Image (cartoon, rainbow over all chains, first blue to last red; front, side, top):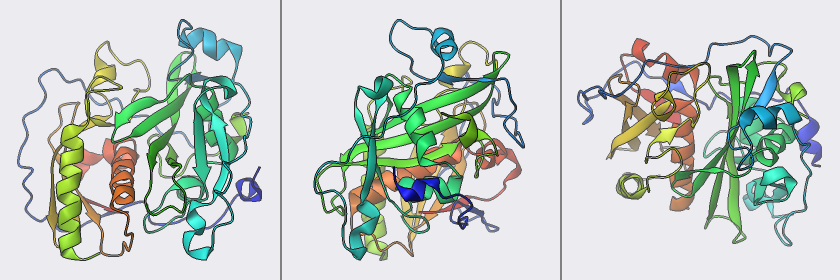
Length: 214
Length: 123
C-alpha cells in the first residue's frame, strides 16, 4: 500500500470546474427533448454518509442479485503488485508511476492499475481522485473488486460503481473510471488504468464515505 | 496547446464519440451508469446520462454540446486546453471523456437548468 494513500486532508485542487459568465455562440442549438425521457433523478446531497446503509455493486456476480451481493457484504480489496518496470520513473514521468493494481470480480478478475497521476492540468489517477474528489486508494480498490466487471463506456473506458442504500433507497454512489488503452505519454505500454474516481453528485465526497468502505 | 492542435483534438474527439459502440448501458452516451433512488422503470437508461451531440474547436477551447437523456435542453461545455502541454492526444481524449463523465455525475450537472452559460472545465 502506498504511503500516499493513507494521507488525508491534502490540498484540494480547484481544478474541477468553474462556471463561465459569458455565453459564446455554439453550434449546439436547441435540442428537442427526448420524448422517452424521464425527470431528473440526481442524488440528494448528504452532509455526512448516514449509518445503517449497505453498499450495492453496479455489477454483481452473474446470477447473483444486487440484494444478495449487498447482504453478503463487501469484499476487502487486495492490493496486487504493479507490473515489472512500471515504477520509479524520473520526475518528468512520475505521474505514470504505478502504485498498485486491483482485480475486479472479488480480487480474482481483470486487473485495474492505479497510477500516481496528478491534479490540476491533465489530472488523472490516484492524486486526482484523492485531492480533487477526496477518495482514498482503498475506497477505489473496494469499488473495483466488488464488481464482477466494469461497464464499458466506449472510448476504451470502463465504469465500476457502488451505490449506498438506506432502506433500499440509493443516496450516494462512488464510481471509478478505468481506461484500458495505453497512453503514448507513458513510459510503459500497460493500460492507463484509473482515470478518475468520484462520488456521484459531489466535487468532494462527503465525510464518512472512505470510512464506510472496507 | 496551440489552436491547430486543439482542432485536431476536436475532430478526433468527435470521431471517437461517433464511433463509440452502443455498449454498457445500451447506447453510446456518457455519464453515470446507474440512477440513484427509486427510479421509475426505464429511468435507468436515461437518468444521469447525456449524448455528445457535437464537438468543435474555438481557439484553445474544446467545445462540446451535450444532450441530457432526461429531456432537458442541450448543455454547452467548454474545456480549456490552453494550459495543457500534454503531447499525448490519446491521453487528452481519455481525460476529456473522464471530465465529461464527472460533470454528468456532478451536482453542477444536476443544477444545469440554473446555468445560462456554458460550463468551463479544466482538463
